[in-house]
Image (cartoon, rainbow, N blue to C red; front, side, top):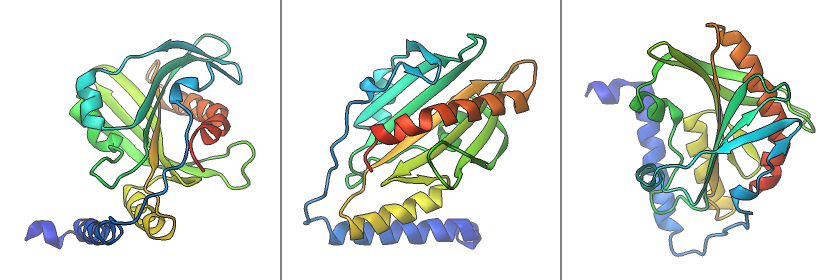
Amino acid sequence: MSFLSNKYARVLTALLLLEGIIFYSVALRAENLPPVSPLMTFPNNISGWEMYKDVKIEQETLDILKADDTLNRVYVNPQKTSEAYLFVAFFKTQRYGQAPHSPKNCLPGSGFEPIESGPITVSVPDRAEPIVVNRYLTARGDEKSVTLYWYQSHSRIIAGEFSAKFWLIADSVRYHRSDSSLVKVVVPVRNNDADAATRLAIEFVQAIFAPISRQLPS
């Protein structure tokens, strides 16, 4: 009963029930699966940021993610003094249980303790309005990192998990589409300066946003 007394739990439960009803009602309809280029074709050099290495994802992790395509790379900034980790998971459909995993669930499961979290706005090129993304500061022992992430679906940038569920339902009804992507940028904190790590993460997001948007289906 305490679970049901939580308003967020009630909202999430209602969204999940509505999602199930709608997905069941449209299950017999053909779903529109937009074409998308393999994520491995994402540029190695972006506005001076150079790919340092491709990081292989363990098969056990891939089995849990159930993504249709993934990208996991380390880039270094133009000065070769700092690195940023880019992770993208693309799901062509969410009809059969596949869905992006929130970093707020995955990072603590990997031993990272949350310190701060909340939305921030980021101005990006060729877009009139800034995008809203999640900022997540975590620590594992003496190691700290800043994570910026968002859900990208149907040309939308979605920060909140609840909002992602809402737009999933809306797009399933209107467009017969349930494709979505999780885009995550991680920058290690150096000299205990989380603000500097956040600024670097924002710079990287500004560099990759346009090519990421061209890579993912609109």
